[in-house]
Image 1 (tube, rainbow, N blue to C red):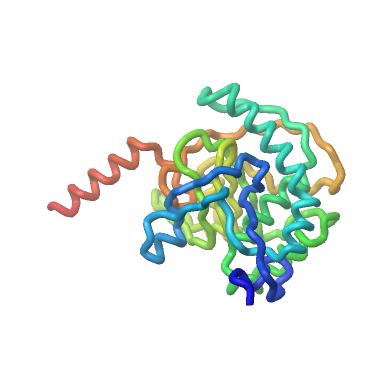
Image 2: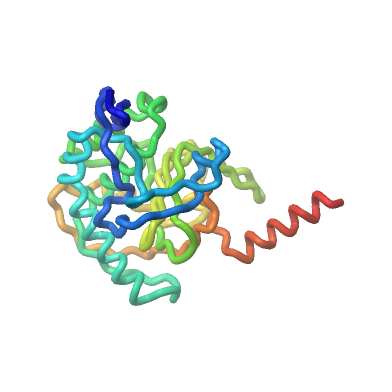
Length: 259
């Protein structure tokens, strides 16, 4: 039996699993990384090492090769354009920046990443999404999902999946995050819609790119996106506090405990 035998997150078959780089290796994900991962924290481990780039054994060879050939190249082109802007602009705020991409393959690669991060026990809940990804020509993302992106300007890589995130202010906002991945130049967040409620990704003013799904597979499109800059110092999805905000929160927590 193979050391990495398991259920392929895309086809759902019991097979030998290959290492899926998340994001793809050519998208600046080819170096060793050591950082906090939410799933590892739940197991009592502080950090996880990724010796050859971020990812995990979750797709069979056939699905890995297929989606890589269909979506990987166009996703890398998108990331290369983003890295060019990221390098030129640094932390100078928000601009409408032009990209020339095939939007549908870019969107589908982000969703392949999200599916590859899912727990195999939840696969039955995402059959429609998996079918969408295994048909390269199919347009329009299944209605219950939303996809957001942002410039990841500072902090640590983020690799989180299958978490409920809540925020309290004047109201309570609860969002189920299927996956969030952050590795410069971009971060990506795949959420499940909550009926009648603004998602936390919208509340955080991330850039909604769900509409990438309305284009044909081979359709090139000049687009302009206004991406927010976000920092990822903590491993938890949709936590974009800067260092001073985190320090302030820690000091307040200590003060509250001492009273």
